[in-house]
Amino acid sequence: MTIHDYDQMIELWSSIDGLALSEADSRQNIEMYLNRNSRLSYVYEAEGDIVGTILSGHDGRRGYIYHVAVKQEFRKQGIAQRLVDLSMGRLKEEGIDKCHIFVLDDNEAGQQFWSRTGWDKRSGFSVYSKDGAAPQSLEGPER
Image (cartoon, rainbow, N blue to C red; front, side):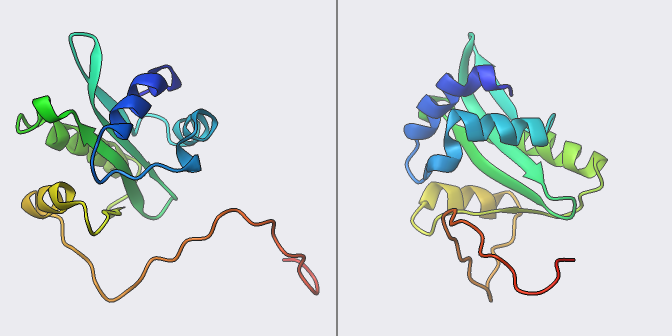
């Protein structure tokens, strides 16, 4: 996956029920993400068109997968699983043994896919998010 794939990727992502997009998915932000996490994200093409994607990266400790998407007419062909396997293999090569994916509660197809393919649904914690407010100044010495 490269930033040159962006227009087709965003078109695909926008067409997928249960896949939420935000400012984090702007061309600039995706380009930064791909540069920071090179060789971990993939597209799947059919006749020159992108029909599947996986956006993957890590923080040095845990892997994260975003935007696994396959066009409706190409589903049930193992494309998503191949994309996941590629990304997971690359994460393992980089020393990452555990990976997470965030799936919206109302994304039934996503819930079914991840459960069916051996991923464990976690419980016992909540995810909190905050949009980019400017950092507060720190009192005392910085470390």
